[in-house]
Length: 115
Length: 225
Image (tube, rainbow over all chains, first blue to last red; front, side, top):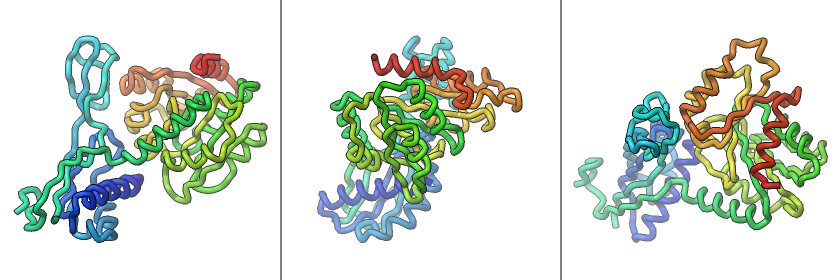
């Protein structure tokens, strides 16, 4: 249940950004959550429902989550692939020299607010 | 009107594009700098409860006697693990999270300022027993090791992808129990390596000492001593 900590950090960044832009209130918080970030979107939503109303600036904010599927690239042959079942061996050449391109992120993408 | 949520409020959109855990990353960066300034190499250990993190630290410390070692222990409650380590004559600082299921870089930052790092070459940071939550929070350690013990079963790596993805080494512990469990060490290694082909794999028993010299040697190579 580290989604509570993740949500507190999210609200800190939202609040900081909103105040910097002189916002009265925030109405939408859009995030990108990677499927292998270890964060369960439903749990983050629950945490947000409880924690966002505790701050005046996010009192009525809604959370929108975009889930990001993992994608990887092979450094041996250059093939880009979707790691099925978390298998990061290149399906093209069998090499283990692969890198994750996306799928583990926890990103605050944008906020919509009333200035 | 806002086309994303349908509300009638909101007259300004700000593209942020920042890591939600940026504050944790900032502290993790500080921690790394602090450790590097003191010439300390640090290893974070993560595993489920009872996999033998503390026993592994004890076994490695025994083997590496003479080089300066310090330990940060993370638990939800109690000083028990730090007391175990101190009983071996090794300085240990106990972090208790008071309910939180993971350490974060800010907590470790606080602990680093309580530890005297003079003469210390190697710092172990033992995370709270949990294979899910700690994985998302970088602490600033140079390496993360993930530990799995034989009684937990050989199907675990794919269930905890992030823990294995972000580790440098995978330690299979309690191999002295292999005769008593249906556990295929080759299967678990294969699965761990398909998740993270760069993992260094070790099989040990912290209790009998089997495999500890090889792991200690690897650690020494990282310390460049």
